[in-house]
Each structure stands twice: as C-alpha cells, then as structure tokens.
Amino acid sequence: MKTESRFPEELLWDEPERRAGLIRGFYEQYNEKKPSYGGWGHQHEEIKAPFYRRCLEANGHDERSTGVDVGCQGGVLINFVNLISWVGVDIDKRALKVAREAGVACREMDFTTAIGFRDECVDALMMTEVLEHLPYPSITVREVHRILKKNPRSTYVGSVPLDYHLHRRWKVMRGKRLSGEQTHVHHFSFRELNRLLRFYFEKVEYLPLSGTAARHPKLNLPYNLFVRDIAWAASGPRPSVGQWALVGKDLL
Image 1 (cartoon, rainbow, N blue to C red):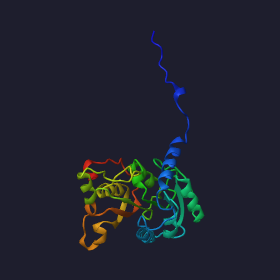
Image 2 (tube, rainbow, N blue to C red):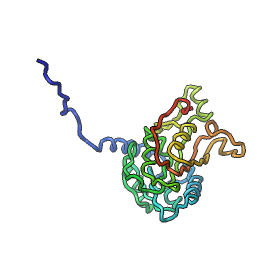
Image 3 (cartoon, one colour):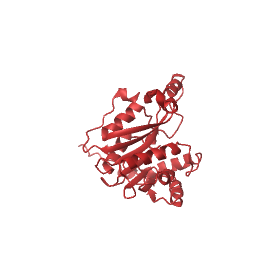
Image 4 (cartoon, rainbow, N blue to C red):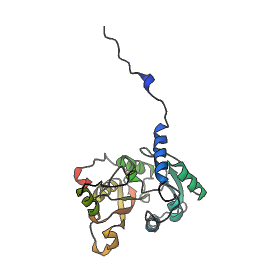
C-alpha cells in the first residue's frame, strides 16, 4: 500500500524578515565604500533637482501635493527638489538616520519587489538611481502606477544609467563586463526604458545627464547610443493597463 508523501515542514526556516535583512546588510556594506549619504554632485543631483522641480511645477504641484521618494538615501534630493510635501523610504538604516537628521520624514521599507503604499495615495513619486538596482523593473513601475493618483497631474520622476551606449558596447566586444557596478542587477537600454514608461504613462519627458548627447544637445543624437545617464519625468498615469511584455529588440 502506497503511503502518502509528506513535505518535511520541519526543514523550513520561518523568518519573515530574513530577505530584507540580507538585502539591507548588503547595501550597508556596499555603502561603506561610497560617498556619504548626504553627498552632492556624484549622481548629477545639481542637474536633476531643477529638472524634477520644473516638471512638478508644470503639472501644478505645490506644497499641498504629497510625494514619496523611494530609495531616498540621505534625503538630499528631497531637500533640494522641495516644492511638495515629501516622505522617504529606504532599506538602509544608516541612510535613514542621515535623512532624519536632515529633517526628512522617512521610514524603513524593503521595496525590492512590492512597494508598501496604498492604491492611488500620492501625487508624485521619485526614484532616482534606484530602478537599476531592482530585479524586476516591470513589477516596480507597475507598483508606481498603482500608488499614484489617476489624474493627468500625477508625476513619476527618476533616473537610471543606460548601459547600451557605444562605450559600453565596445567594452563587451573586448570581453569586459557591461557594467562594473556590482549592485546593478538590471541594465537598461533607452528603448526598453522608454517603452516601459510609456506603457504606464501618457507623457514622458527626458533629460540626458551624461554622454555625448548631453554634451552636444544641438546635434540631436540618439539617446540609445549616445547617453550614459538619463533622467525622466512621466505624468498622466494611464487609467487602465494590460500586461507588460518585453520583446527582444527592446533590450538593445
């Protein structure tokens, strides 16, 4: 007689916060070698801050609007963009300590997959130099879309490096890694980023931060080959969206 098979439940380790703890420990160790959490200028903050502020103002946002900075680090951009009522979340406790000392309202959150905010609860969301660190950008942007209020003024600002510009393609041809940054788990091309943002938002505006296209804007060079870092401001979350599907040509 065949006995019923049983999964050995006693082998499982029930520790709900283990994943967040491992990720937090990794970033805290990594950030020991980075510039300070309150540093300025090493990620184009002086260019991004006025761009974000201008786009928020153009969409009618002011101190009555609410926004969340996902991956706020030390709260540098919150304090320089200012304009609206911001809160920040991050997984790194030491970064949050710096942000609190800078007067930023913030709390700890593991946002590597889901983002723990209610549906349609904020007017703006900022995610600068974060999306490339997360394993499933399509899930993350869908979460952003869920959290933002569904009106034309709602705005999603952020920035990422683009890893398929000419310099990086040449590196790969020479047998080197696409990116030497160990915490980058997703490598964007402009085509993929643009398709992802326009899938969820009616309007998207870009600002090249570095690369030949940023140095020579009058040449109108294609972003996919001549931009290394890019910022965006996406507004008008689409009222309903289907299922995101990445196609191969979007990767390059």
